[in-house]
Length: 121
Image (cartoon, rainbow, N blue to C red):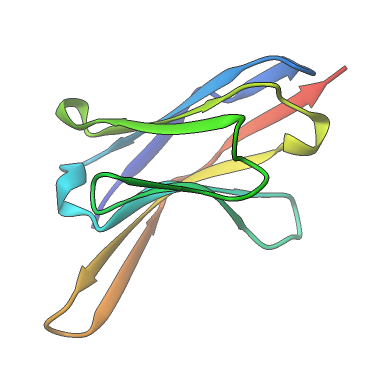
């Protein structure tokens, strides 16, 4: 069971920046994917950005050019740097990870508790 702990959310003004952190309980290299989703109350989660196989970064269209995902493998931590924030970026941001068990043909997904980001004028 992988534990994921987010931090760094909060209140930020329009156009401001914020960096979220996700500390994993084990090496990021042991995970096939690690990244961020976001969710509004009552709505589905939407992918924001992820790192695939430890190196390939992938972004949702809404995040391209404004958000950057990165990792510090020594700290087992993934970051989401967000800039030029807009009110429509107001969500709970959840860290997630995937691990494939190829032998069994199974995919395991793990989720953090989430951290609230609120963009205000």
